[in-house]
Amino acid sequence: MDAVEKIKSLKNHLNAKNFKRVIEGSTKLLKKLPKNDYLLNLTGMAYQGLSQHKNSVRYFREAIKQAPNNVAAMNNYANSLKALGKLETSQELYQKILKLSPSYINAYNNYANLKTVINDYKGAIKLYEKALELLRKTPNVTTSSIIGVLFSLAVAYQSENDIEKANKILDEIFAIDPLHVGAHKLVSSISKYSKDNKNSLEHVKKMEELDKNILTSDYEKKVDISFALGKAHEDLKDYEKAFKYLETANNLKFQKFGSNLEAEKKAIENIIKTFQDIDLEKSNEDSQEKKIIFILGMPRSGTTLTEQIIASHSEVYGAGELIYLQQVIKNNFINESKYNKQLIIENQALSKNIIFSEYLEYFNLYDLKENIITDKAPQNFRFIGLIKIFFPNSKIIHCYRNPKDNCLSLFKNSFASNTMNWTNKAEDIAEYYNLYSKMMNFWKSKIPDCIHDVEYEKLVKDKESEIKKILNFCNLKWDEKCLSPDKHSKTPIKTVSVSQARQPIYQSSLNSNSNYDKYLNKMYSILK
Image (cartoon, helix red, strand yellow):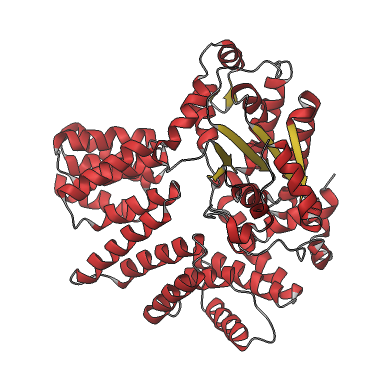
């Protein structure tokens, strides 16, 4: 087989997601063809497919060095930089690509995705629309390409709370492909199903027919339609059917990805061991002008609602769910999944606060006018010790709710990140909740006065009183807009909480766990 045939074979393996096979083959071939930019780009894409972005950028850089106008390699390089949090460089590359090749559709799409990361949804929508315009002019374009951009547009409008435009685009998708599972799932997430609503019932029937024709082997579609039907039947108060579909979805996810509960146990034990005798009262006092309000807790504990309330305040910028703190900590203090305790202590004593400075660099592309920023990443509860040390002028708000309701909500929702694979099994959800409780008890034993608890049940029952407590803790003056976050929050919502958080503060989810008592008794019994 000659080199051309070998490269074609590797491309087929890449399309089939046999990434390790591509890397093995291309590594051998690159010894003979070290300057082949197509092969270098292919290798980078294989590493990208494995989420090994540091490796991928080496190959993309080399491809661009060999062929400075290789826009495909540039585009892939920008995508990996975006994944690594190098947002400014990533943006510069997308802009360079579009100057070199104004009709390069992938760059518009990927640049739009970057815009959603920095909450510039208006900018993202313009770029998606430009990509769509170019696609419609392209001869022999596949319908899947058009639907892909339309779907991104619908999600962007949903995050912006423009449900009318989101529904209009979903109708366009159904006109092309009435069986598009992702679109049906999106409709399910923004709809409230009712037995009195004919359209509701018709849509449930359509999804049930669709489900019957999807093979279990078509994993992603089966999972999506099962979660969508679970949500619809819960709205209709048919909890037996709802559970059946939710159980199917979770079982499929567990079969494919397993659970990372054991890794999470080790990580939390390592954190507790590391911080056991670190003095958390000793902060790095080189503070910045910006103040961060960290909103954390279990996922699905009310963090999104709490952020929407605080972000409605005139002095606050709501940044949403961020991974920046996690990235900074990983870059500076974690080696082979373990904390370097000595480095933490050394940085604690430095006159310069490198950690806070690195964290703020991520906001360089944001349109920030406010000095107070919310960071709503629930699992930042693992990093409370580091927040206390390196973000001395910031605030920590801990959200919690009825443990059974919290675990049920996790069981009912799908999470894309592989760090959330502990949600794929009901019993593991409860075990993780117990780990989280242990972690929070540890932090509170160390710094009891630095964490403000927000109990979801109290917040929705007595919102004015609880919101006043939150604002007082954050040293913010009273702002009436905080009472109606559905009307006043400026923060786009990118998480599974989007449909609930866009409603007025409501109590209907309280004690919802009782509807599933006979199905999830084992999960509930594990909770301490």
